[in-house]
Length: 327
Image (cartoon, rainbow, N blue to C red; front, side, top):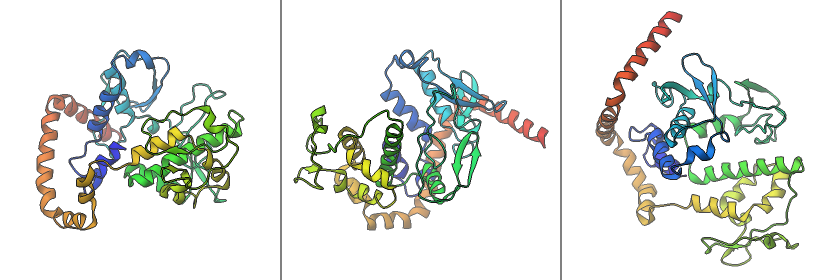
């Protein structure tokens, strides 16, 4: 959510020259990951990459340092042209998003659970109400040709407001829970969302889900269920009936974490800057402020790029030669 806030902070979002996706990713991972992260994930986490030189899919699971994990994750997030022209490097080799070569890598087809954020034919993915069965295969990913998928693709490239993003997160939770129930891996539990909002670190026990009585929509001033939230009420308009049933048994921990992440940061100043008159004024001043900001932030990027400039220019020369040779 912090990344989305940063992307939407400026009037033109991710297109503003001040927004640097990979700087935010590196800073966030450096802050979150422990120093021994490479020992914890080696052999357990597999990152899919696409090697630029030959377009082959590469799966990486062994790491020698925390920096290698971050480098691999940055490469796996790089979408050509959208993120830039010069791919990042991992162990001295340039890679881009693994989805360019294989969106759904399978190590063992019999035991692998396939997941996709788009409507399709994967184990865990959104389910569409429409009877439209047209779909295409995009580098091993089933992609249904429907308006919902085109909307999700646009939202992936240009982040929506936080409430909409919260709805998408909740949809993913419902998709995973639906799969677990269909496979008999978990049994649906009675509703258990009667958690006071004032509790910052609630102690949740199994007794919460042992009650047979269904929850009310708003049991008190400080107790809330999913039905009492605006974004979940909006979600009910588009979910399938099966999901409406399990919407009543959302984990309290998940719900509170989602609610906390959606909470606006910055206090009164953020509210003032986001109010309609202030935003209108900022849009009117954009022709004057954008050129100045562009010069400043482009200059900063050039200074940061200077140490890597020789290698990057050499790679650009190699890429141009390959393109002209193919032409």
